[in-house]
Image 1 (cartoon, rainbow, N blue to C red):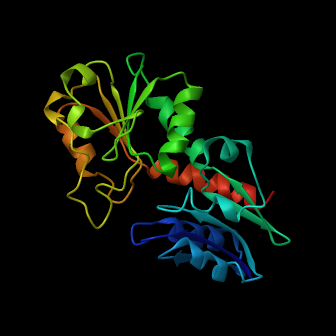
Image 2: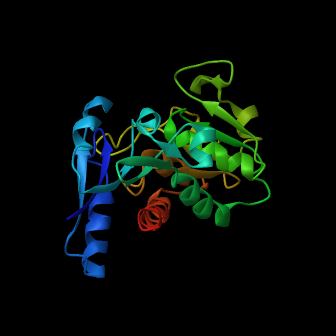
Image 3: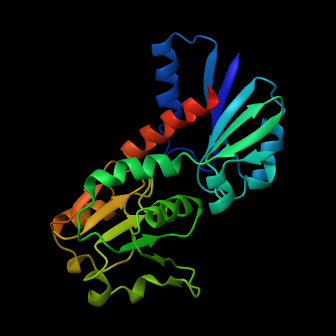
Length: 242
């Protein structure tokens, strides 16, 4: 048996298990399985890793940073941003990768317009690390926005007309609005948005979050995380088979 999986908590929102299970059926891989490992704390990963049939797994909220100490080695991207969402296991050695970077960049670029020259990034977790890596690569300056304020992070209540008149790319990396809490969304003045704005939500369940819905009502273009999910999943599959 070749075993793969997803670690995170909670996992009720995730489509990864369904995606890979269907992929294994299509490829005729009858001895391959993909399981959800819902871990209430990262220490439970030690138990998961005792399974000798485990060949690799993905990582989602809230463990993309907490999983780093478990790694035997990592890609340059993981070393730089300190966030990992894909692990390959060979002879008991865990090598970390970040396929979110690939998925986010490839899904975002076709939507970019010349006026998308500055970005607001909601959240400062592991997913945001992949996002800002891509923004830096694309030479798009960004501002972190979070409930936890620091020298590099501003609070939601500071977002006003002045900021939104220059920051036309808005990216939600938080779980706000993710199933089952679908009525939640980043607390920003949506009435100040317009057709010049593009809203990208890394959430894909539901397909249209409250964040995207409110932006669309103001004429903004919107994009959810479905394509990013597929692209990063395929990159994970490539890594596991390399």
